[in-house]
Length: 145
Image (cartoon, rainbow, N blue to C red; front, top):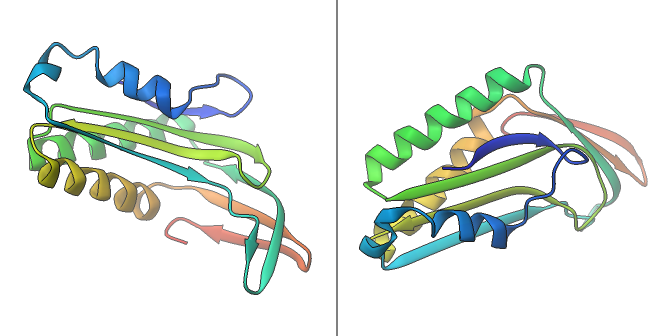
């Protein structure tokens, strides 16, 4: 199981790497679905253009432990076989990947629900600080933003 929060410059893992890692689980033969999500930096919205973004967490190890707890809880709740998650921190440009998640399960319904839970819980429960540098200045968004 791959569960990591890593500096963007420290290691490069892409969504295909995570899918491949999930497929190494010996229980993959029980699966009929793999769902993936890649969250990227949005550069353009109706009211602003983001030119770069900084994403930090005050305690990387603690945040990674909380991520592991979230993943375990979701795996137990939905009965899926495997969940892999990578969340990057550091300096980003529009289009850069920030958050990768892959879930493998027996059926599409619980697998898709588990992926949705991973996405929402990571966004709202982990302690991240996002600084968006836009044409109009810098916006600071704390967890859940």
